[in-house]
Length: 273
Ligand code: IPD
Image 1 (tube, rainbow, N blue to C red):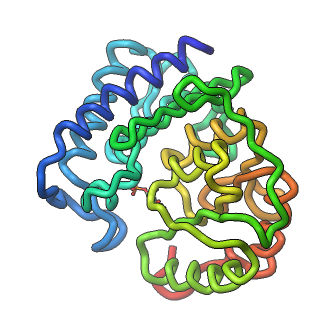
Image 2: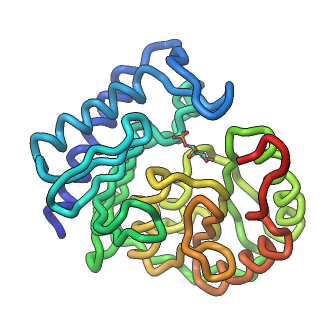
């Protein structure tokens, strides 16, 4: 297990160096995905390319699921789930909250079916590195993390994020309007993997987001659970593309009830996902 953590960290740091040092003054948009605001930069592609080359050398029998390059099968049963830049829009604008997220999982590489073994979220601009190994705990730059008992919901600082499609955003804005008056405040920092790690670090009490992809979630969710927190969906469902709620368990249950009342994972309506 610790070998997988070391591989995840080595790769995330190396890709993070490329991403940070290779950032030109002006970053261009190389392509768009689900909508005009869902962007890919040349560095997303270069970072994933580097991660894939390193994995081919270090772990040649493992499968890879990457945000930009899709799935490559393997024979070992281990899949590496990779976000080469989580927080691409921050990267585009020169905001520091972006990270390389690398996780090793076994089982079908979806949050409902995998068992995460190891993960690293490396934020090169802030020089912070979160690591976690199944049964080995979670660490920020070598310091062991423990999710603290959160204050009552009204005193919680809550992170969230938004999708890229207009109908999804309308639904998320409606849910946000129900959550915001009931908590201390809400932050939208722009990188789901870092948001999850901030819950483990005590810089956010809770985090919720609908529509996360496996690569947004794999490493950060392991950091939260290894720090003693909970990462769940609504109505007993696992975290993932429906809804993800993370934090200390009593507060996750409380926030989940509000999100359930709001039907926060209901279909978005015309044009939605
Ligand atoms: C996005 C970020 C963002 C979250 C979106 C993700 P990307 O990932 O994590 O914070 O709100 O749901 O898609 O596109 O920057 O890799």
